[in-house]
Length: 262
Image 1 (spheres, rainbow, N blue to C red):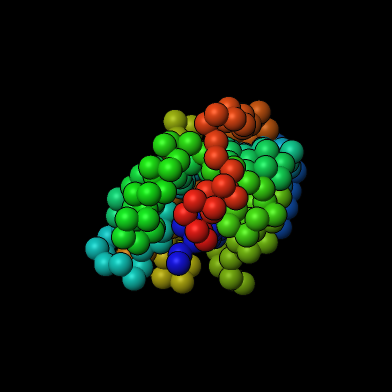
Image 2 (cartoon, rainbow, N blue to C red):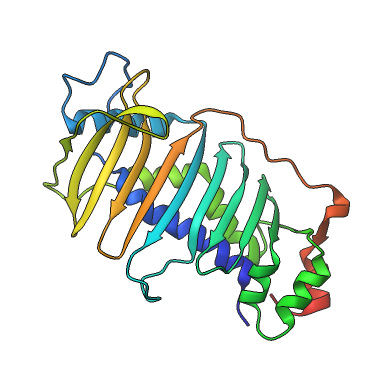
């Protein structure tokens, strides 16, 4: 039997990390507000990396558009919207492709609440079991901890330190890869300088704020099959991750008792 909650959370994590490849830049430098006109693309990207490294919280959104119409290249999340901080708080939504539903999630330390919608349950569980799961929950959250294997992947999707480590480490471009500065524009309603490069047959564009502190605003990675856009905001902003009311939750153990293994 599939593990629907694990699948959604793990897919969110893996796709965010895939999109994060677009956040590459070598080295590190201190943030500054003295304008970017005299800086190279690599120097600007270095400053954006430093801002990511020092952020106490981030709000990350992912949107994915498919071009090929097939299924082999489709990643599970069509979109994700997650805010997370260094204190272990996280909240947001993951939406799956091909109308397979969405999952809301809240994380506070080791405690996790997830609320898949009916479309998710019916797409993930065979026969009438998906309908039974949705009927059992009646719109409530499933509550458990990060120690449970089914919910552990949420930690990966919501762990700020792990996300930043992947952005800074795995996102380093191939040796010799170079970026070029594009014409000033706006992204996410913010004045930005685009940084462009080609990598493994894909077009990568980083959009770095050109006013105020230098930080990454948005990045896109485009191939013949798809385009992924990740937007990064909320640097240091408070993360609202309120635990649902008890009457709006059902313990994961209780759900298993009623439906069997998940």
